[in-house]
Image (tube, rainbow, N blue to C red; front, side, top):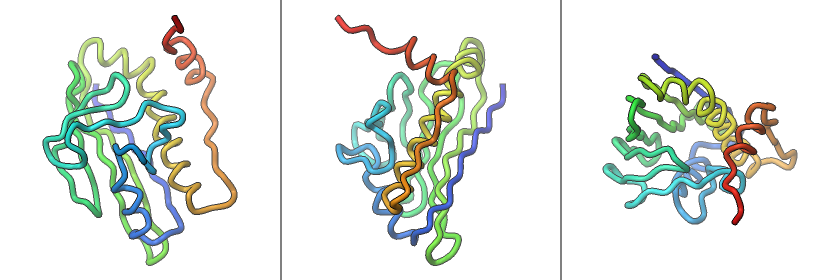
Length: 162
């Protein structure tokens, strides 16, 4: 199945301010991803081409990194053939667009996993990340609402306490 999944958000800040956040991706002080709600991104060699890692059960490696523009990750999962990418684009001197794109083809069981769970969790994950970015520049804190399906999936998939 062909999958194109795009999320975009305009932030009323100069690109230089978003680049500062972008550069913290996959660090202990990640200012891009909502690590208080989701598994953090981990990369074995940081933000550089060839670095391997992922978040939660999703694994990938960096195939392209342009420090003030984008980072591209190739999926490293059976049945997920393609990539996901973060981009930062200046729209105006004090308006910047951040985006996240998945462009992949799924096969076999991966198609079912995408359709039933991963797509929904991914969408919530990215919107929470964009909320975190936006909230660093505004007093009116944004908090995207999870769908009932995302809430259900998270409850069912939550690790059991021993």
